[in-house]
Image 1 (tube, rainbow, N blue to C red):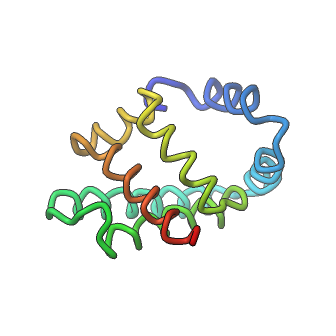
Image 2 (image 1 turned 90 degrees about the horizontal axis):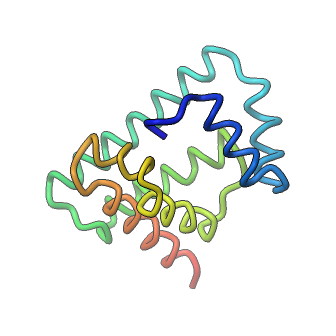
Length: 131
């Protein structure tokens, strides 16, 4: 993410997920967004990521209720602005946050180890919703 331009990221996303319902839903939603919408999306995501970093720095376990609530906020952010995001799908995204060095760098540039922390919180949140 941090080393891809918006156009390169969009092209990669289309290549990887262009045939999915989530991609179509995201394209339809984002195509209608205004500058104000994008500013709100960015601010909301920034707040979520800052809160994750603060929780981690404060010693909150990734399985603590507070971290799980942050994971749910992150999932609902995707669900609201981009595409319907189930807990299982969110868990899959969590894998990408640590497997793809660009996503990992995005989080870890904010706080070392944050990508793993966010991923673990998302997976724990998904696990509690799967039973």
